[in-house]
Image (tube, rainbow, N blue to C red; front, top):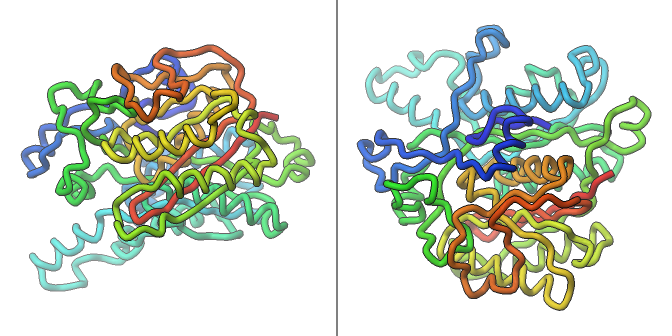
Length: 398
């Protein structure tokens, strides 16, 4: 696994941040100057790739591809996969990403210069939605399935689910999966316009409040997360250290008349499908990493779905790591899988920070507000996106 996020740029730092309930959210005055009403954002540093990659590779990379490279590099290193292995074996890539802002840069050049030649030869590869997969597949010499999944905030969760299906069907032995998201403030103008971002500009650490009655919106963030998925016998044969198993994937679409309205019914269906795919019962789940974005309607609908799923059975621990990271948009499904696996490895549940007054719909949920040290054998991770797309993943320890 690998991660590049606002709570750390390596697995050890991220693990400690999760244990301590450390927020990675800041106030950026440049966002207010630009015209956004909220200056809140995750604090994600831009990686320095000069010591790592030649100019040839760097020139075609989008910002989110840079984050993805750092996460993928960590993931391959942890999995014991080097350049020789990648050159000699077929490895695929499926990443969740739903756009970047480089096209706006290119439009600015055109407006100023009125000459497309001024864009240079690399603009095309920076501005494509699939910039991440086309760049990583080139850098790492990947020869298997190669595609980008665009499904709003469920993009990278679906990427993991689809990769799991490819491997189960025997079409691939190994796939690099993950998600990445730009930190460019211009990507948030439409979200800011519909007042979906918190306005707690004076208290950034306390602004992301999933399932709290006083929440007032999400906090945008980004970066990248990556995991190496591999067929079990193939991993055993090459002597890999197996961390966890993706044992369930469920999906649904809301099918409602409102493009932005979440649906408890559809989220419940996705979770049910994931449980059935994993051949597990709700009582088998130890922990739920909720989608929990801190939005007024979204948290209510997810709380309803979770309450329905676990009604009359053992209540798992529940938290939303977005309380610390903000909403990592396209990468959220992958990063939250990584965060949850780290909890599984180190025997703790990260807190849902800033929860002071639980919403009524979540009263029956066992939402933790302090770090709980306990074994996690099986967890459920939820993701949902605008337009009604829902994804649920079940992982278990091996």
